[in-house]
View 1 (cartoon, rainbow, N blue to C red):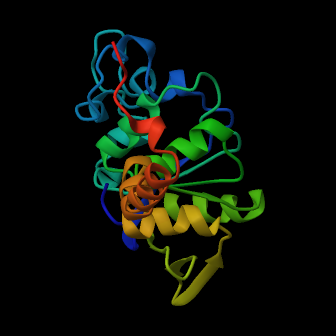
View 2 (view 1 turned 30 degrees about the vertical axis):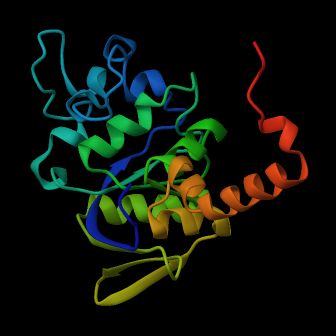
Length: 208
């Protein structure tokens, strides 16, 4: 998992509430267990018509948001079924940070496990950021200092956000669940060695 420290990018405004995981990545694309190749199907039913032609009015099909790494959306984002393909498709598209007033719990935790930073802010603040995104302003997401900043009419706007310390560390160091376990492999080995010396019968070969 890549380390996350700072992002500088314009943002995709998606002012929709209750965006569920089926809307993020429809069920027909869940056959794969690979984390790559799903970005092209992100928000598939909103991006394409019945003939698989891009819908020009949808935000992801607009050139100015083509390389955006930030998504600003509505409350309860990621609700519905707990499919890991949802954060996979978001990350594969190139989005590394999602800003909303609230997230579904499972989706929120899955984001950290896949290197995505989900930021919770008050609805009023999210609305301001969405308007700034619609004006194609550039944002800076500084994870280490937990700040969002952007320039508008020569004024530097700065917003602070709260984040669990352990989740912040996992993103800064690029550690998923496996990485977190491997980081403690010496402690695990020490425990096993001590246990073997105290209770060797637990580790003796089974008599057939």
